[in-house]
Length: 81
Length: 470
Image (cartoon, rainbow over all chains, first blue to last red; front, top):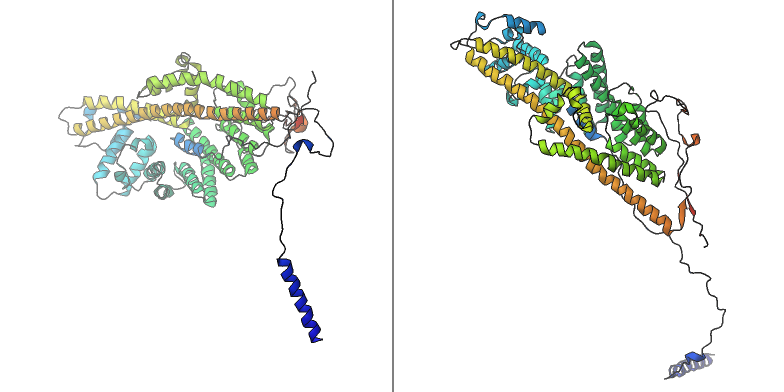
């Protein structure tokens, strides 16, 4: 039994060594013929010119608002005498 | 007072036994109250121990002349006199110099029975509000209102009655203004509503109430209040800020064209007015008398002026300060004339002559001071008005720019506002259960001044603009 197990482990490690020795080769040169390319699909053209609507970011001016009437109070005190 | 003056004319200077200095009591008896006050202050300033009768006489004289007569004296000297009128004057001075702790200490000394008590409480209410002490502010303002109202009912002088009435109104308005500042707009409106339509302050508070409604987004009510200024009864009042608020009201309802009309009218209307006023101010800006002379023109003489300047002068003349200053000036001038006669009638060797000549100089200084005050305040009010017109022109320009930007957005977005012009409708009028709706078809509208509301629908909803095929 033990002998069988050793043989099994030995055969796996041999397989791993064999995988490491694989050499990949790539094409060194490839030519594309653009004129010969074909695209499968349906050709659709828009009927009119359009742009996609989106909300424009805009900044509102800081318009006048009265925070208080403190200057008027001082004025009232001063105009009493 | 008149009796005392007549009495003084019948009494020859030689008949009085003058010492090296006159006795203030005697001068006061003769009707020379300003001279008596000056004499008394000069004597007290040299005295080490000031006694109660001295202080009582001082108080009596200050109440007769008004505290302005003491304005030229050294404050360190005045601080030695524990008299409520003097302490009130010192408190006011400290308030003007923004020394609020010092002001508070002086003003707290003015007792409840005193003539200046309501005004002292008014200044203290303002200081308490600035310090964030709301409890104190409410207490002072209530004390001011109650005491001013009580005194207005007690005094016989028309001038004083008006002074106390305006003061009481000021204290009521103070409350509303502080509520506004706290952002409690509805409470502020309720406080404003407590002020009678007959009040001197009423035309001024319409604008403030309109701001409160604006901030509650009730633009229709705001616009309605502001249209009150178009009434013929209000033609002598100028509130450039009301035009800005009107333009803003229309703007918020997206009634851009209406807003632009208001802006254009503002420029057309106030440009001519401010040009006329500016030309006058430039040619007399260093004058010490021009504005004083302008203030004392009779109504006939005022007709020769530019109508706008005449109306502005009339508005300034209605203020209590002018009335008090002018009344004091008349008293000083009458006394000065009689006193001059008295001094010139004295022998050159009379022991009191030197002292009396000094007093004459002082009374002339008081007269100059009062004229200068009237001149200065009128000039300042007019300069302030011009400045306000310019500042608000900028604000109007900003609204115009914003309208242009929004109109441009609509064009780019191929949108338009829901209607070209929002139409008025009763449905749009917000009202409380105490307010009624009245159509005013052919009705007279004087009684309802200040109760109007527009009924404009908001025009802010946008719809897609249809493309027209040509």
